[in-house]
Length: 159
Image (cartoon, rainbow, N blue to C red):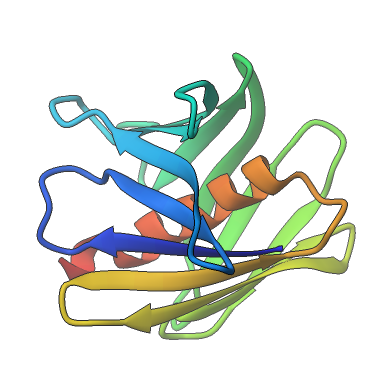
């Protein structure tokens, strides 16, 4: 399944929609504006919360927790590396790996060594847009959450 995520560069907070490959809204992402650290929630179109993403504070490198239905499903931590974007993803029972280019515009998310998602970032005048191609049979919400966290870690300073 292909998703399109478009974030407005000059917006207060990080609220945006996730669209399917045909341009239809599928999910809504809202952030808490006045909070310590980033906190985002992914909702379906009826307003049901599907995922919660929270930045962990006071870390040497950026770190985020991803929750689904109140359960911690992943911890994403950027590893210190020169000239690379390297991430450590800890989940119960699964092994994930993220492979990306130096400029953080193209990423692959691997699960047990198999490519499950590809993230491609594009730039436009008033928004950052990226496509996320996720293999069928994969957990769409947690994989989208991983893509959002990777983008926040690599591109928040671009604003």
